[in-house]
Length: 263
Image (cartoon, rainbow, N blue to C red):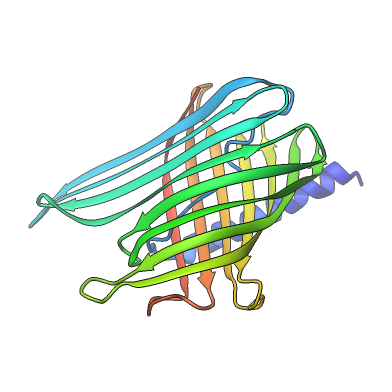
């Protein structure tokens, strides 16, 4: 039995488990940030990316407009990669914005062709539904590519980041925190079929003085190719924060689906 077969069989089992979770889940608003989605083929150079957009309009007793958009852009030179990721989600009821969250993330991978390469990143985000007024962070670390085959890729990233957070639920006094944290993620992506791709990524972020009180995130994305330029996307993200700054749920998750435009 080949290693490729075992890896693809493992991907299928993980997919079945993810779908089972999706079927039994309710939707909550968590922050989805998949920095691995825009990784390009190592043999290509130039620009690549995709844009996703969702819009719904409901008119019952109130007019409710829901809009979400995300963009993932990457430029890859012979030696380095630069990425810009953004996401915006809005809910508007009769002209009043009730829920909004989003982020902007900048990342650079230097000497990308090496098995071990350095990365730098900056990020800013908000999530009014969770009470996150703002989060700003900057960090760096090393990425190790442990798997690089035609249909399956895997890597591990580990580094440090400086994080500034301001939290407050509506009507409460704001709480501000400044920390140095370690951040580690492992990602695995593969082609299930010529028209279907699955990506899994897990994050483990914690303060060095409290290594067993982490913020852990599991993200998955399933892309169904409709045409060369268009895909249908199903994404699921679940986060557990062992020590939230304010009194909110420790476990949050989100399920989203929509269309993705590739270019």
